[in-house]
Length: 383
Ligand SMILES: [Zn+2]
Image 1 (spheres, rainbow, N blue to C red):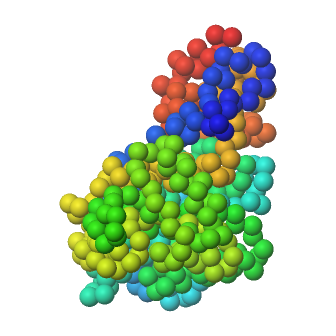
Image 2 (tube, rainbow, N blue to C red; image 1 turned 180 degrees about the vertical axis):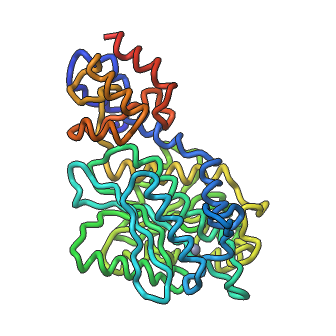
Image 3 (cartoon, protein in one colour; image 1 turned 90 degrees about the vertical axis):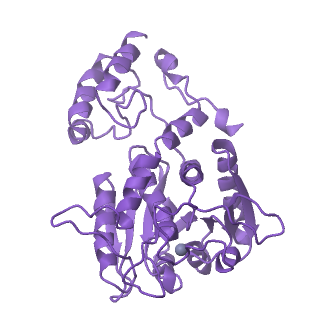
């Protein structure tokens, strides 16, 4: 099977270090997605924790036509940039908050673009000034954020974009503008994974088959994409997924369909279930991190499955763990770049500009730190 293929080894001397399968690599990546980090982003977007800066400011809503959404956009952009990604705000109508777009350029086929996204705007009919919008849809937005933080450390064949859309609640205004501009520019967006409301899979009691699953909404043209994403969920998560071909969820993936791009929407329920009352916090003040009906284990499985999907689609570039100067060997020549990586990530890249894919995270815990020293020495001395 494709996931058990051994990583390519460029040199017999490093054979010892190539006992890593592709499946292991994806496991390493998705296990870095933790509830504590996911929750830390949710807390800021939903106004539980303040935005950084002084005096502290707590977001009260992210209504597209309000002012707080612009503070949220600035924070999202700064988060993406802190991960080492280029990020920008796309203003599509001056009275709306902007889309926030971050990009990880592809290494071999950068013209092929995959997107993981969610809308960050909120809606509360009774009073737009107060709308926490935790499930709808900080939950999807923070999936894109967490994916960006983790995947920015890796390199892929294709380009990955991480997008927080505005104007979704006014009928996909931001994503329609984005997809239209992409189409006009001739961009080759191959596939889109959109997440909208992933916290409450229970209450799925309006179908003939009451179930506790993730719904993947697709059109006929995107069925290939839905199947790939569903397969990744089957491989890497214990949750059930149900693929629907048809208009079963109106969210930002739908906007891409209007411009001929393939896209899927991941959600706790179909839109008819949600509109039918499956989630009684929908567009209400009770849509907070404290809602007792929200299932955080389920949410983290969705986050990890979505990340596995985008990794599979964009194509992970193989690197030899520990070969930090990219000469095909793990040897004493890697000591200097390892120390530079340990103390100054930018310094490493400046010293070895032709070797941007290597990293020093030998023990695969997501950071390059003192915990990598012993395993690095072991790699060097066991040849
Ligand atoms: Zn939504």
